[in-house]
Length: 232
Image 1 (cartoon, helix red, strand yellow):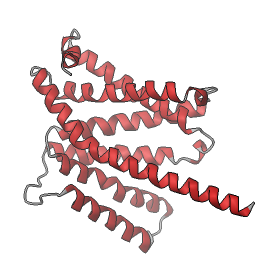
Image 2 (cartoon, rainbow, N blue to C red; image 1 turned 90 degrees about the vertical axis):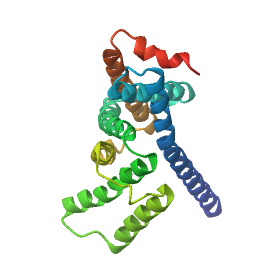
Image 3 (cartoon, rainbow, N blue to C red; image 1 turned 135 degrees about the vertical axis):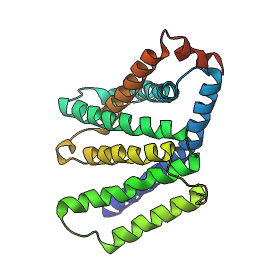
């Protein structure tokens, strides 16, 4: 029995590591892809404002993700509780603020710079948590944070000579405040009983709905909203 449990535990850990690695790959690819989509969108609809481009590159991602999740995991969506809805809405609000500033900032800076600055929440989170507890972070946490930031600098190939604090950089830094709030909201003890799938679906729907509504309003008639879809 102990051997079976040990094997099951190792399998779970292995799957968790693979899932985290896969998440990191997709997260890293999202920066150049988002910038590329924004540049193509601006070319297809040159009269569109930067904020319309931002909204139009966000809402399809999240509504498509919500649709896929609803189909693949529909059995786990039964009996959604009020607490799960509340957590999902909160995550969606924080995500909306963060992703809006991050994607708009991408239009005004390099993808590698955005990826680097987006990691500031790695520093903010320990400061907030240990500030609440009124004690200094452990040496292990400090070393881990330094290693993460150093790794991001190397992988992002940041050009310090080209680094400046313009609109894109400021928006990216501000976005990390929202992402920090999102992680802290996720970690609230009251949500410990919630299921991941319903909460994630609610978050996707909130973000997708917010930016679809914003894009529809800014598109002024719908032509600018639908035009990019004419190009594969």
